[in-house]
Length: 171
Image 1 (cartoon, rainbow, N blue to C red):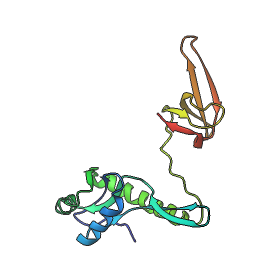
Image 2 (cartoon, helix red, strand yellow; image 1 turned 90 degrees about the vertical axis):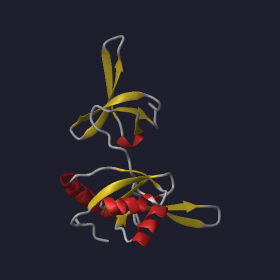
Image 3 (cartoon, rainbow, N blue to C red; image 1 turned 30 degrees about the horizontal axis):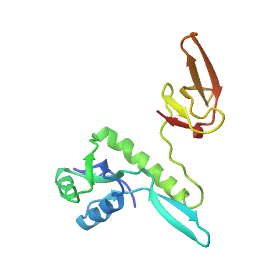
């Protein structure tokens, strides 16, 4: 599927109710609304069998090409929570990002793709795994590496350690 700009319509993220992404996609197809739900391949091994699942890359979101009339049509699906408003300039960036996401989606058939929240410099995070599990800190980037700083406020001091970004979760 090619994602491209369409006159009088705008690609926009639509927030859906929990576990309703595929329901909205089917509803959109029935109503002729262009949409894109990026899926990741997940393989689960049980005792005697292997099961393959395709799960949403961004749980709770479906990308739709909408105008006001089409949005009012798909609201009747009873799966939508809200639409994230996008202007023309933001739509150009979103389309480019969706094209990149399509490449990740194809890659998920061959390799394990992991979706993580953005770890912006200065954001507060919790270490999820490892020797520092449970510690809160602030993200610091030095020379392309991720470090977290933990402040000891009563002493006016701080300690910094380099840590794998995969071990961090936003607070």
